[in-house]
Image (cartoon, rainbow over all chains, first blue to last red; front, top):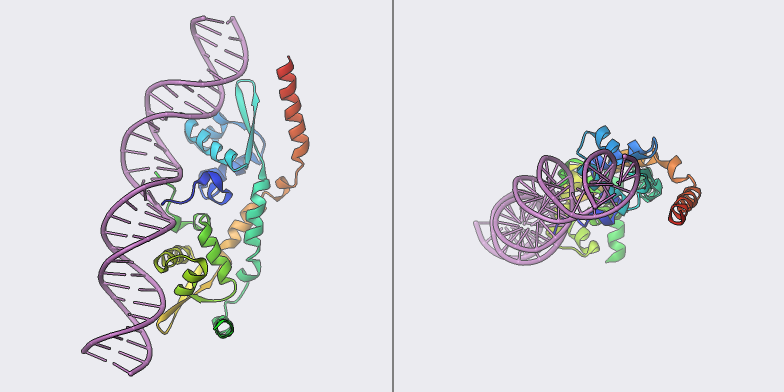
Amino acid sequence: MARAATTSDVFNAIAEPQRREILVLLRAGERPVTEVARELRITQPGASKHLRVLREVGLVRDRKAGKQRLYGLDARGLRPVHEWTGGFEQYWNESFDRLDAYVQDLNRREEND
Amino acid sequence: MARAATTSDVFNAIAEPQRREILVLLRAGERPVTEVARELRITQPGASKHLRVLREVGLVRDRKAGKQRLYGLDARGLRPVHEWTGGFEQYWNESFDRLDAYVQDLNRREEND
DNA sequence: CAATCATATGCCCATATAGGAATGCGTCAA
DNA sequence: TTGACGCATTCCTATATGGGCATATGATTG
């Protein structure tokens, strides 16, 4: 099987570089599809597809504005990602003392056996 | 084309739920492949494959320990993700309630016109 | 209604997995 | 050296895209 549908998960949605660019762009304000496409130098259908994925995971919302459809950022969905990675904050500052980790592992094994 | 190779990007690497589970598991200390597989209830080859992806993006490191190969967390690669999402912090704290009300009101007006 | 602009979709193709099974490979112990 | 164990690879399959194109759908205006 391939990866789970990007449509169902914020982590998957932001795994695509262009979708991340779209989110960054939308921080500056709402944009119609055509302009998103123009700014990212991608086709209009391409922009629509990425925006659809972002919309389905709730990272953007759209509203009609005449003939246009304005897409705006809804960053709330990024919070879980920020918090999940934040759970590793104390680890990325570690010195990676392998002996410590090994000893901890041994102790844990003895407890479980 | 499909998404860029998961192998070249941390965002892609953590888009896979089981790989996120592996990272969480490794916070508790190093683990041999077999145990990672057992804890996540996946096959050994499955664990090896996920660990390989994580290794190639630098999120885990491995070292030989006799017949075993211990995998340990190297969370530094998660920092960019944390910082990228952090760039949206001020946005997810915004009140979308007011925007919701405004949009709904607009739609209602249009329907009644 | 027709013409037109703005978007969304459907199609097709090439690629990148994730998962399962079988197997290759390296290491250690007897 | 042989056997057992732990792990990595390879092969195969079904699926999920991302991108380009052509076209359908919607909405606006005359």
